[in-house]
Length: 175
Image (cartoon, rainbow, N blue to C red; front, side, top):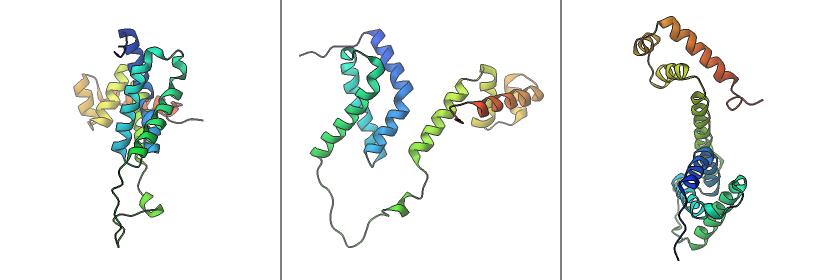
């Protein structure tokens, strides 16, 4: 039996879907597994299964449910097949319980970084360039001005306007 290959239009739809929904799906996968690497593998497996079924999915607006169901089913299958590699010891090898959860939630931090990058991508090109140079490349106002061939005052005012737009972005600050 040969697996149907997606058309280029379907490939573009699938790629667009993964780009838009990937971070949220990764958060779902991370909630299903204890290990971030296992979560990434789980998501990749579910996306491969979704890609192979893409042509058969009638309503692409409902694909989120399909992928999440695939994540759960794949994780359940993995769980059933798992090999037990746990050994009884006199000491607990690593912290467990509420004390182990004192660090920052990595999934939430990644979601916040993704939101900030999406918000920056919505800025006009000139403001986006200035924000990236100032805050991601850690350039001074003078260095940014020199790199872009504008005055320091232009950098100051454009970055100020850009930060104002970011503060008003509903994705970054809902409500």
